[in-house]
Image 1 (cartoon, rainbow, N blue to C red):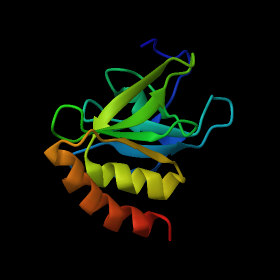
Image 2: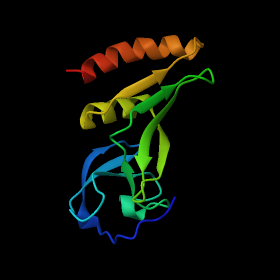
Image 3: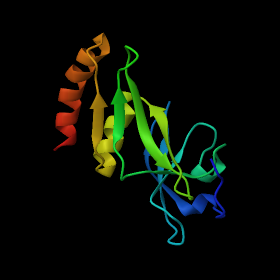
Image 4: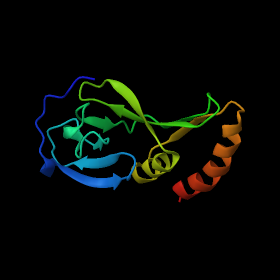
Length: 132
């Protein structure tokens, strides 16, 4: 991923959602950036301090749930300043909270593996709460 050409400081970010063993989601306080919600993984405290540089939550694309390999894989969509798209793996709990907090859609692909029925059971309960 291309590093952005903006210079950020810790005061540019406001934490809006965080997970102890996952990602942190920050609202960018600056208006001169591609902006939105910056994402930090465990390689840095703030988005601009991470190994990948600033990556933005791509709210135009859905959070993906896939069980093609007989277990759940959940991905949050990202983009960089140049518009390059990527995803990052997250826990199901993190995905549900991201969908809820940022009003994103969730797209599931299930293929009848055992994980699919587990996903449906959890999903029907948790995503019903997202709709509230």
